[in-house]
Image (cartoon, rainbow, N blue to C red; front, side, top):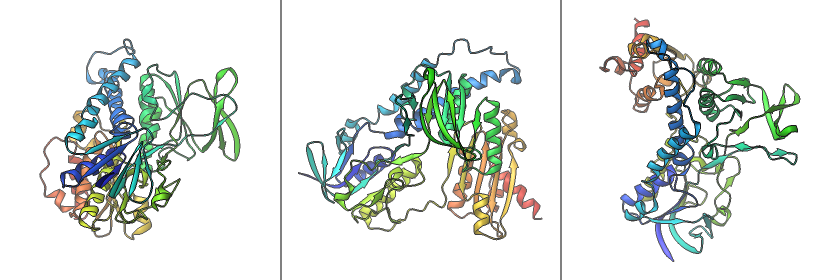
Length: 463
């Protein structure tokens, strides 16, 4: 039986960081994966979606050509959805080429690939196919999968998820997203710009409920301009196939049950469920639940002290960068004893539609629930020259501060918002005063100047 210092179950973004970091620090590492190395991020998440979003932005830029004094690009002549999806796949494969098993084996990591994945025999021994290995410590990084609705009736509707969407080569005439989250906003806008009839069905009064209301206003306005239809306060309960093959969605709306119909494809974006099935966690003494996944403490330890978990399988904040951050914490705590805690108080995230949406820290509503004397200040993108030169003036940056001018959070919407909110993230993480922005030289003209301007303007109001 092979023995290892660290066994990593799952080779997605978190698992890769655990395996590579532990290996570089001298641990003997086994990496176990049931599908493809790279996980959701590489194959069905960040990489393909951001590639497709870039294509849609480029297409939209051609439509906006006349406003820039350029010749009009007429219609969608020559547009082939299949070619776009082949391009997306080529980008995925170019990244996957650097994540092949031999790359990690050459680095000294033992890779176990088996469709059954890993099963705990006890808290130290793990079965992978016909082999059994022993690990001093284990990190579970198995991620999550899309939540889908039950079906009604004998017919099985054509249902896509973020995992199966990338197999499409024929563009759907119509696409109905069940759930108004990030995937619906990003891919819904893309497909609308490609010419599909897009509908988003959401149980909340407005889509993207996590957003600041002012940011929501901008996002909804943009999506409507792109032709996206939104049906709100509609809680999806089931889907099926009706007469003449029409897909049906049963919803509870305003206290009544009604049926929505679409001749297009249904896309389930109803959230994520942690991948805990098949691991036989009970054998290892690891507690979990089907909704939130594996239970961990502040050090990311499970209820079995030498087994840790990170990423989607254990975190409510299901982001690639969270999995990578937590992976480093797991390795540090395994190799040096528990000393690093899982601090997500300064957590940036972005939605990569156009314009981009970005957030870090507390929202205004959260801050007002926690602190007295909360202050907010907002600067529009149109007040910064770089946004004007790029004709991207829609949007703003809003910062949230306590009564002592300490930054509590920020919300942004605008071109490259995911980039310039990082300035705020760095300041919050290092507890920099807002005067640090005023005293720092920002290159001109840049988008990130908005992160300086919002504070310099705020400070002027106090003089």
